[in-house]
Length: 439
Image 1 (cartoon, rainbow, N blue to C red):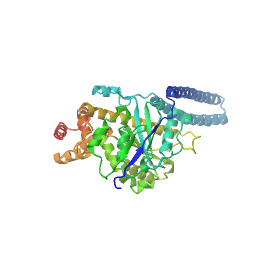
Image 2: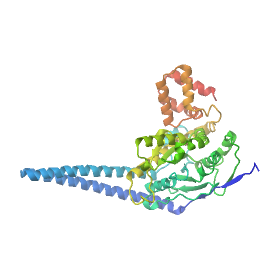
Image 3: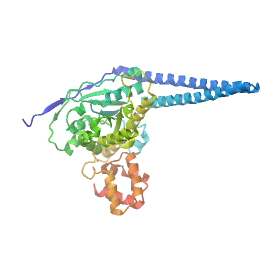
Image 4: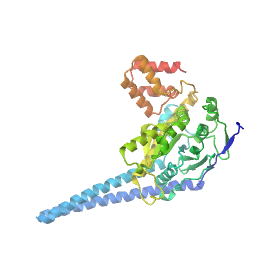
């Protein structure tokens, strides 16, 4: 009776026609080029209008017609202000198109540069795609966020996700989006709706162990995941089939943030992601419902704490929904593209760290010392050696930007990053010895 086990079925649904992938990308590129040409023509027309207004002002001034001159001057100023507004809008649209084009043409290594991998002797030929897992509870706006990304990248007619799909309790449904591109979204529908013991499912999803028709047994005993199980599952799939980046989606007004339900429930997941070297990105939806600066900051802090995302990787967004699907939300699309760009940067840094560990036989940085947080490690050395707090803070800020969060990751990357740290030779020597002695 106490040993009853429940099986969970996972299935991946690919809604796209494989032969249509390249056509989809080409159509998006052609549409992008057409819009850029239209914007160039509109900018030229705006400048012609301004020149015509200036000539009119000169003509009126020569006629010494004070009334007409004043009107022409007012009109010229009005046209100039209008031009500035419209030009700014067109420039923002052009920037969005450039961002979109960069993502449509994305190839792995383009964010951190392929040279950075080559210098460390890392082979990235197996990275034909980046897989991004999305986690979020029912009602978080995760499905609408997926639709927003589809629309921002592929166009309004390609938006397929509007409604929250049905996922029965006890079943985690994996569904893939943006399969036309070299980065894919893996929607983990139903993940948050099972119970508090979701770390095992998270592990199987992150390592790519879950595939069409596979089953895993749920046999929780309230303990942390066995490190040996982590090591064995890490090698269960091709590296490109694993999850390389994580997005958490939460709703700004969700009471489960305020009452710290998520903060408690997600502890094991946060610990696992930190252990693996992930720096998750958090998206807070329903930005338009946050009325005050105080409410915004509270939601920001609570979401960042619950998911473990750094502050510079936590974003607010107003999604495209069924109600506003006919509008053009320029700020939404720009934010969506920024989020994707940040996630791809995070994914490339994660892959570099994992491949460095594999190259040096470091595995996943197992062991209590390797899993120790870098901040705690450096603060301990600071106290022992009476270091300058400002230098330590500067070093921690730099390591956070590089997503080096554990001692194990720092050990693997130390030779590559120590030259960039504003520390004294003596401080670097102490760190080198501390890293060596903890192996």
